Length: 203
Image 1: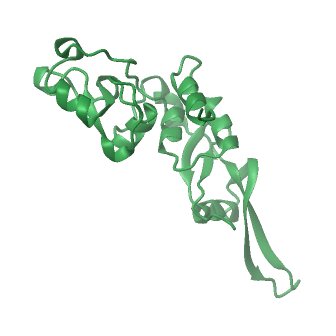
Image 2 (image 1 turned 90 degrees about the vertical axis):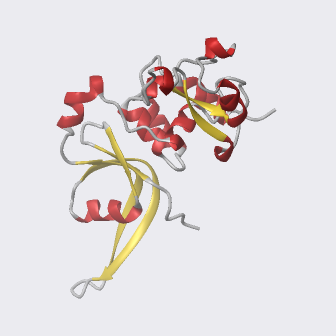
C-alpha cells in the first residue's frame, strides 16, 4: 500500500537540503524537468495519461530524495547566522520529547516550552533560551532560573542549523533521508546522539 503522505526531501543541485515536499509537488518538479538527479529509495510510481501517438501510458518515478536545478545562494550566504522559526513541535523533537529537568520522556500533550532565563527576568523567546519541560517541572520552576529553583538543566539548548531544522520538521523521516540529513549536521550536533537513542531498541 503506497503511503501518499510520505514526504520527499528536496535539495539543491549541490545536495544541500532545502525543504520537504509532498508527492504532488515532487511530480510537478519532475514534469517541469527541474529534477537534476535523485537519491534514496523509490517511493511512488505515478501514472499519467496515454499517448495518442504511441499508445503508451506515461509514468513518473518519485524517489525519497530529489535534487532540483539551481543552488540556494541566499541560504549559503546566511548559513553561519541562520536561525529557524521557533515552534513547539520542532523544539520537543530537538529535545527528543524529554523533559530537560527530570529526564523523563513524555507525549507531546504533556510537554511545554520552558524559558531557562524567565521572560520576567529578561529572558527571550529564542532557541538558545528554551528547553522542553514536562508540565510538572515547568510549574515547579515557575518564574525562576534553574539555579534559583534548585533544578539541574540536563542539556544546553542550541539553535538548529538549516539541515537540523529540516529534520525536526519531518513528519516521518525514512532511514535514507535521515542518513542524508545527518551528513549535513555539524559534527558536534547533539542530535547525532539523540537520534541514535530514539531509534535504539527499547529494553
